[in-house]
Image 1 (cartoon, rainbow, N blue to C red):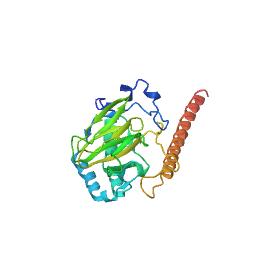
Image 2: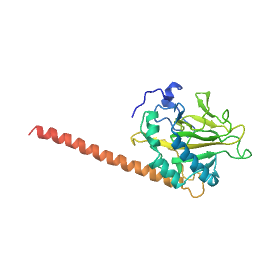
Image 3: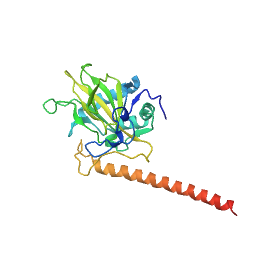
Image 4: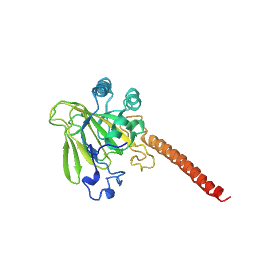
Length: 256
């Protein structure tokens, strides 16, 4: 799936040595994608994800970095099986993406924490997940609460309005989510990986990592995710081996 290239900025637009970038986890880029322009999805999508937020906001808990709603089955099922968000992101990015197979990481709502706990919605960081879509659910002050991207030392502010989102390679772009000067700012953050399993995966999970919510076993989910990728790659290798053998047999028959 391709786009017209007007919707996306590449890492190479900002970094001449983009292949050699290295984040704070020692990981380099997967592909030459930095971020898209801001875009909307549609009123039905917005109303649906906003209603989920209103219904489950009391389930939000403070983790290591942020106050989040996570691991709600009806939200996951809508995003994965009904929303069509994978197709939207793939079209904008010019490459096929799927929601991250780790259920705890496929989505989260980022709420506004108490200021005594943390000044920003989320402080400067690289994402543990390779690619993310940040979508504005609510924002009480339309002039503040910006997303700030550090692009080779240049601070680029992205002011998302309610109903707008941006897709980016969050594992390679250091970024900050500011709080609103007044009131709340709530985003829905979806994590993605390339559909093609031959593209290197930059998901970063270490055994013993502190989960956001009680009961999450992030490392087990990570191992299951990696084992599924290995299984698919082995199957692809078997298919390729069969194709190679068939070609060799064709050559052999041609000599009989």
